[in-house]
Length: 166
Image (tube, rainbow, N blue to C red):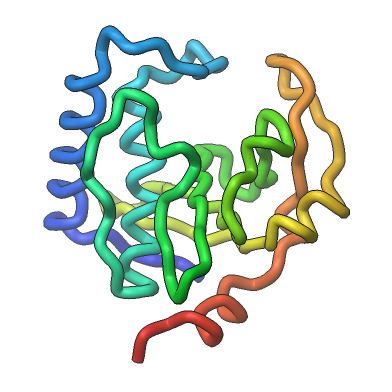
């Protein structure tokens, strides 16, 4: 599923990214990749959150906490969701450790630009139980990570049919 982000969506992403980034400049983070700034990481993640919010008609939480969101991005019908975004389109869904998968479900998204427009591909989703059972250990040069390849994830349409507000 591919979601196009509007100019208003991008302005809201920019607002929240600045809010998160500027408030937490002096705070320690767990970012391993030094090739991408904290602000750019916020933008990448917020693009994925914006796609989720558009699909499920929910608001992004713009509350800033020095400790972050603790892995919880959204709640629908008492089920919790983490949206993981990567700039590597088609890449796997991964966590630094199994302890970091704290929600009922995780979704992987791939923001990208095409013809001057911004899109987010929703690569798929997985329950915590299935991820814990089926994950593989991978190393991207920053140490071992727990991961599932895109083809091992469920189609987002299955989640939409279960949770989408009509």
